Image 1: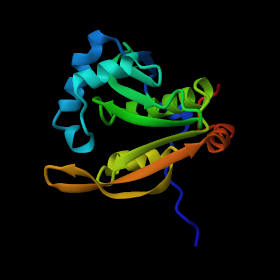
Image 2: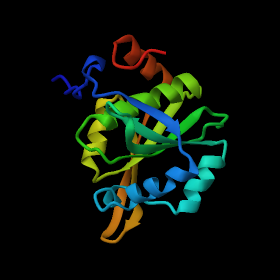
Image 3: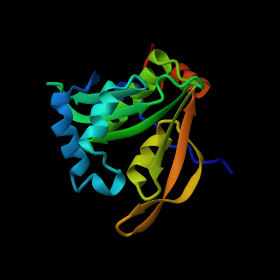
Image 4: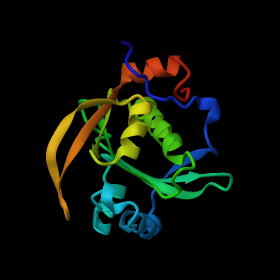
Length: 186
C-alpha cells in the first residue's frame, strides 16, 4: 500500500507575490490587532506589545511584516527565533496571515524557508502548531514539514488543554524539494 502524498502546490501556480520586510515600531498596532482578531485567537497565544517590541530589537529574532498582492499591502506577519542559535536550529515562532484563502500563507511559508536556509544558514527549521489547527497543519505538511512529535496538553486555553504538534524541515530536505522544483531558488 502506497502512502498518500500531500498535495503540493507547484511554484508556477503561486499567488500574487509576497515579500517580507522588517517590522517597525509603527507596525505594532497592526501586529497586535491581528493577534487579537477572533479568527486568529483560537490558534495562537498572543503576545503583549512589549514582547513584539523586544523581538524587533533582539538580534536572535527576525520579525517581519508580510506584504502581498499587486500593491504589496500588509497581509500578515512572521516571527523567527534562534537566528543566532549555534546549533543552526531556527524556530518559526509565529505566522499570522489576515488575508486567508488567497495563497499568501503558502507563499509566505516558502519565503520563510528560503530566508531560514539560504540567508540565516539554518540546518533545521521547526515550529509547533496547535493540534486542532487543521488548516495550518495541512499547509505545513504539504510544504514538506515532518512531524517530530506531540507535546500532549501543553497549552492551557479557556476550554481546556491543547496538544502541540512539533514539525520540522531539515536543510537536506529543503535542498531535495528545491531540486524537485518545489522551493524558491537561491
